[in-house]
Length: 155
Image 1 (cartoon, rainbow, N blue to C red):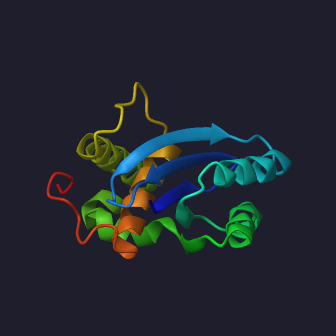
Image 2: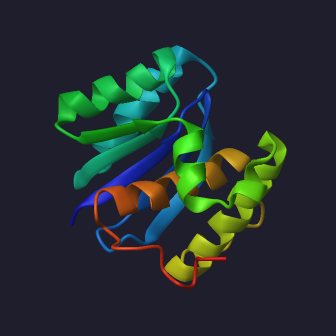
C-alpha cells in the first residue's frame, strides 16, 4: 500500500500521512526542539513507514535537507514546495490576502479533509498540522492519488 507523508518543515513540524486512496490516515504536530533531534526523528518517522512512496515538504533550507536526505536514502520520491503553491490551488485568492487569513483557511480546509477522510477529529489543531494536511491534499492531487478535489472538501 503506497503512502504519502506531508511535512510542514520546521523544528516544530506538522506531519500528515495519506493512503493510496488519497485519504488522511493520521496527523500530528511534533516539536523536535533541535536540528540534531530532527535528524534522528525524521529517520525514525520514515523508518516507521515502510510503504512510504512520497514525501511532500513545504519549506526549504537545512531542516528540509534533513528530510530530503533521509527520503533519498530510503528511495522515497519527494516533492518540495513553498506555501504559495498549495495555497494557489486549494484556497481562494481572497483567502490569501494575509498570512494569518491563509492559516485560518488552512485550518478550515484541514478540518474538512479530516471529516471526509474519517480521521479522528482534533480536540485542538495546531497550524503546522493543519498546513501539513493541506500540503498532503495538494500532493495527493499532484501524484494522482486523487483525480480531483473531492466535492465534500471543496468550499
